[in-house]
Each structure stands twice: as structure tokens, then as C-alpha cells.
Length: 133
Image 1 (cartoon, rainbow, N blue to C red):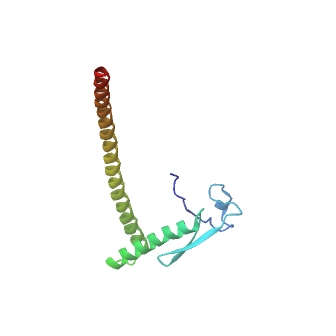
Image 2 (cartoon, helix red, strand yellow):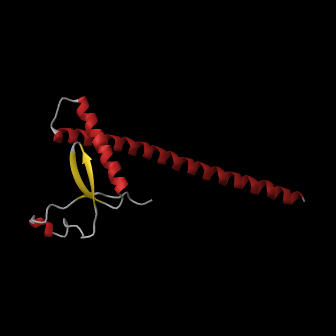
Image 3 (tube, rainbow, N blue to C red):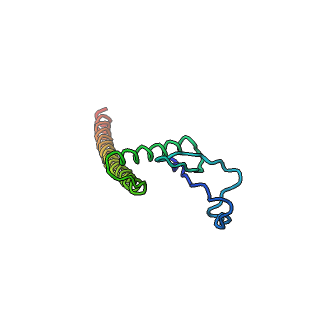
């Protein structure tokens, strides 16, 4: 399985001295994807526009849900609370995955043990039949 596409913000305007830094400047032929998150437009770059839009939709929905349940209108505070909610969901899913993966490992080990046991029984039965014949 490959790692999901990572999004990166578009570089600042070309008058910015840091835009000459190879770490922050983008190749000439990169297309930017415009997304709206909590009434702000962001120009991001990445390989898969649909994936980037999906991520932006998740963040926007989470920020709106947080804002609707709270009294704050500070978008930074809303963003931090939304990030905490998303992090909580991630940790919860990681725990579920670890539990399922551990369960899967135990099941495989149990199946291997059982297969070895059955192989031994079959060898024993077949060995006894050969002695009778």
C-alpha cells in the first residue's frame, strides 16, 4: 500500500525573498488546487485534486461542527479544536486497527498451530495404515 498523497501550500508570491528557496518554491509546471476551508481559500499542490478536495471538505466540515457547538468565533481557536477532534478520531482508529491487527496475528498463529497438529495426526494415521497393509 502506498502512502497517501501529501498536500503542500502554494508558495508565497514571487516578490517574497523566501520564494527563491528550493524548499519553498514550486516547479514551474505544478498545478494548484484551490479549496475553501471555513470561508478561506487555500491554493494547495498535490498529485490528486479529488483527494485534496476530500481532505479540505473534511476539515471544513469539522471546523463548522466545532463552531456550531461553541461560543467562539475566533477561526484559529476553531481550527485548533477541529484539529484536536480529527487527532482524536485518528488515535481511536489507530487503536481499533492495532486491536484488529493483533487479533489477526493471534488468529494466524492459532491456525498455524492447529495445522501443524492436524498434520501430525494425519501422518500418524497414515503411518498406522501403512503398517497394517
